[in-house]
Length: 92
Image (cartoon, rainbow, N blue to C red; front, side):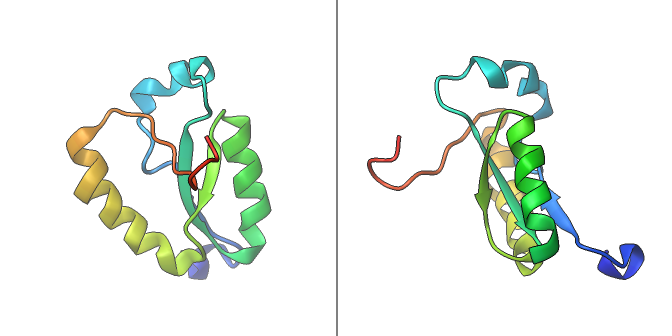
């Protein structure tokens, strides 16, 4: 993808169900949004995710995009539509 854009690239919102988007703001805790991004895209990606009402959850650089795809098809495709939240113990 970077070869086509000649700029920073990110992958986000793949693990979020669009059918639930109108319910994001009603949640007690912001739902998570997994993403992978180049360093140059990280700040903008997090801003877009927060603007949509989600909490950004970084998987690291774009080299993690394949793992995100595998996670979505391996896990979320089987239990969707859901909201999710990843947090360290005591953070919720």
